[in-house]
Image (cartoon, rainbow, N blue to C red; front, side):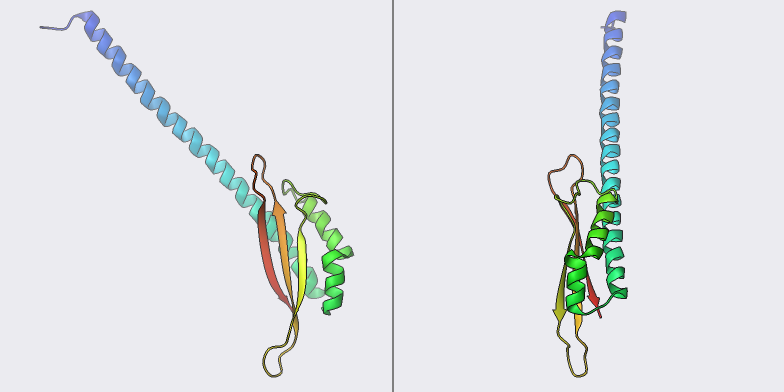
Length: 147
């Protein structure tokens, strides 16, 4: 039995609706992929800023007085630390302030190893941030040997 014009129109309409549905699912997938891409790009930017801030303070330690007492006094709580902390707060890392997610520095003495070795200091620099719309606090930790 041949199809009537109205039956053919109904089949074509159904095919068009299915095509629109498939197209819509594809577009939604692309939008979600773009959103994930932007989020990952922001996360990479925050990690880069944190890395640069940690390297900045480590380079200051390398050119400063390297006695353990002086390093601890200056970079765990002294003026060089507070100036660097202000740079970190102003760096654009989200969720960082003087009271929340402030960066930390811990200096420990490392005994001389072996014969004729020299004692040194180990600096552990940790930079924190909390991305917008996230509940987890992220961290970047750099460890440097200061001789």
